Image (cartoon, rainbow, N blue to C red; front, side):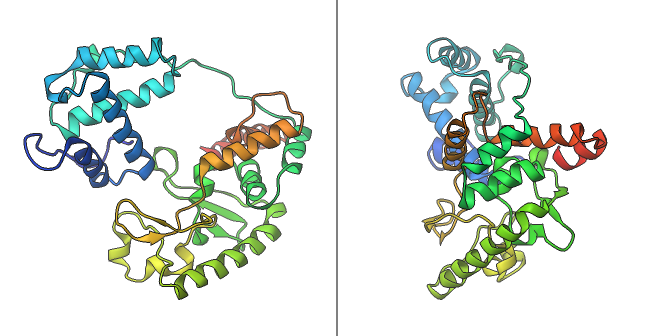
Length: 303
């Protein structure tokens, strides 16, 4: 959802339907499929809320009415309301070429809350309730300070066993960073990658094995999309059709499914705090500081 991409303006008077133009504009900016789906869905909800009126026949008052309904009638979180606003700002700006006056738009104030942090014993109890891939990912959230999507978007080349490092590409704010690869996870992760390599080899034999590559890398480096080093560390169990290209491939694992699995582990461990996968990342930073790590070092590997 970053704003530094080139203009994605599409003429409102011609071309594909407006919802298709939203998707096309997202792809011009190289937005993720999650952002593309979210913007598409919010624009659709906005238009339906106003009786299918064309967006060009509406402006700031209609946007405010929609956002107010989300907050008052549907009681959505401030972050959800602001995501809807981002989608509508995108619709009226890059897509339709008629930017809204943001001074006339109602923005939700996100409440400032202290992060939930588990004790070391609580973390051990939660991890004890997990196994397989959910355990590996949870160990990386806690041991490397990764966000859940950062873990799921890791590619084989981003994991450096020799240097005990994990390279996070295009993290929050589209920044790269290097963090630690905990020794405790390395044996299981090595065995996991052997299994993933076998899955990839089988996909290649079946005529698949092409992973999604960003920023036209597939065109710049022919063959890279089939190369082992570019594959996801945590690929999905099933093949699926990429909605952007029609190519049958393996996406990375599903963040929502993983989140539910970890939430169930928290409950099973008897932890009463409202812990989420992101909580393990907070524990990473907090426990490092408690152990005497320098705050700048912690910021460098976790921000």
